[in-house]
Image: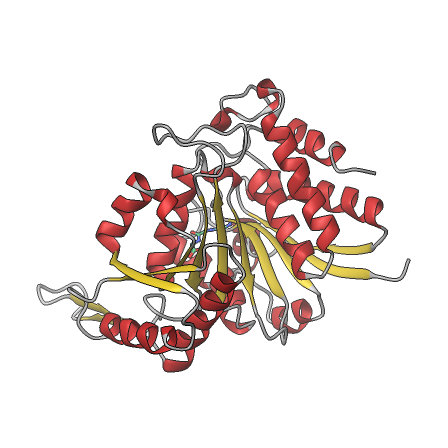
Length: 358
Ligand code: GGG
């Protein structure tokens, strides 16, 4: 065996703990089938349990510890009963994205065979696009504060930060992705009619970069009407590039239009490969269904496929995705309830792993 990858496995909270083992099962099946090695190191931090024990989400040496891995494989973070959501997210996932400069959050949105879209008359092939979300700045700046707390004059401010470097590099990533696609179309999410400083700046940078990509057709929509078009005309989109918050919202709405958020994967990429990239499903920890064994593991398994692709295991990545497609198109009863089936997390995960060719 010549190739081997060291992967940090971080289940996190809630259904993260249930779907991550299914992602790992698919990874192991792919490694056996395609002849590469895996050194999987599981970490219990970035979870409510860790917070309860240590009063923080991550150990002090987390950056050095995780830097030694080829990639990070995360489930979900958030357990509001124990830790306020902004504390858990800023104490873990957002630290990973920032410190490892994972500035491109790539989220495919695809109506898969066998999955029913809630949008009338849509079938496989009708919805197939990417949301490319800026992942390190924008509305998620953490700059702000409160004054006059507890008085009638109580006030709170939070700033949006867009840097030229930050905007240009995510736009370039999205333009380059659009170039690899048949339709070569890029849509920019804006709100420059209402947000009068940052969004006009975003639009200016889009226009400037578009001149470098004459082969890519570019349009832009204000975020409000863009969400309507996601529902009414999802076939219009190919690559959608958006700021941190807009991208977060669009990448939940897109998969919901394509049947279920439960299957949606994401890759938090450091394109320069100076740091490990992170792979996680789009969904969160879902406290409402955690512990019931019915969470859909496909978002996690598809994220495993994206991780393999990033590591250069292209055939293995394609085989995992094909296994997902085959199972989705097969026996309905095996699927989890969000897909109309009667199956559970582990049984669906096992079925997909067994469909990865040996
Ligand atoms: N698996 C993704 C996850 O745990 N998401 C929690 C969440 O709320 N994320 C917000 C974000 O991605 O900005």
